[in-house]
Length: 222
Image 1: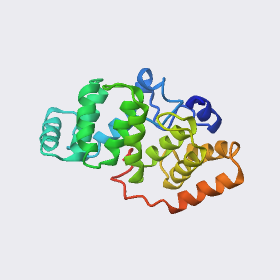
Image 2: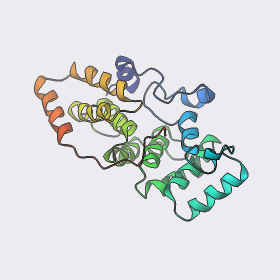
Image 3: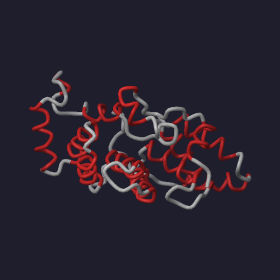
């Protein structure tokens, strides 16, 4: 089983799509491996609603009250955003609880974030298979970062049996989906191609062309 960092270094992933210096101490350990959560992503989620368009400071008491009320009434985006606040404040158990509520409603951003919690072991026992499970759900909805992360997991055999054909397929889909992982996904395909036969590459491309994804709730960085 090859290391994730080795693959990503070869693919030129660098610090990862969501690296943010404000959360370096939290992100640095995983940023050369996968595109995961960060302060930039979390703040992007919070800017989606709750007075930010009117210039109110996101996180002000009136915003949090409105967010919690909507979250408790089952609004998936509010649940995801509330989870992001707990995540930002390093209350990972509560972050996981709210991410899960939104993820169980098929909200792909929450599924992607919950997968990151399992990959890192933040608020839950580290479980690569569970990370893959949630990233797969998000990927099936066209979440570009989850698509890329699945490619890396299949390439390195974390949480799934190592399979270059599947890795190439997911990376191809990620490169077509756009987003911040597009270049890294294309580079991952190039790295994988050096380890595959022409027949395997053709099979992966066929699988990618046949894969039908559902519409995503929105890109993680909106």
